[in-house]
Length: 119
Image 1 (cartoon, helix red, strand yellow):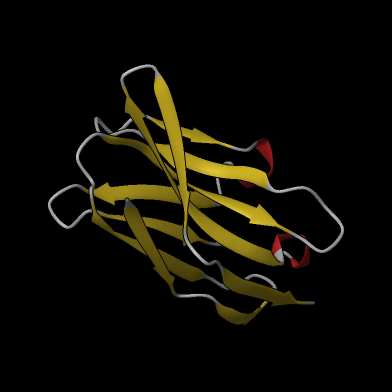
Image 2 (cartoon, helix red, strand yellow; image 1 turned 45 degrees about the vertical axis):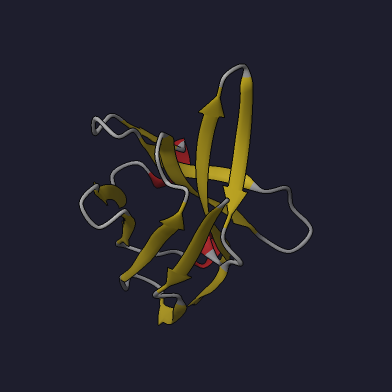
């Protein structure tokens, strides 16, 4: 099992910044990639950004140039720096870790952290 704990959400005005952190513990060997998803009320959960253990990144078009994902492998922690926040970024943000064991792929999720951007 992999446990994920997020921190850093909150309320911020449009144009502001927040930094989310996600610490992984437990059976973390071979978790790759790690990433952030978000879910706004009435909408499906969507990928925000992901990063591999080697540092390759992938971003949703809506956050490119504003958000930066990074990873500290020594601390088993992934970060999401969010700048120039917009009201449409308001959502619950979930940390995700994927793990492949043999032919099976497992998804692990954190409990989520609320990000609210006021206009």
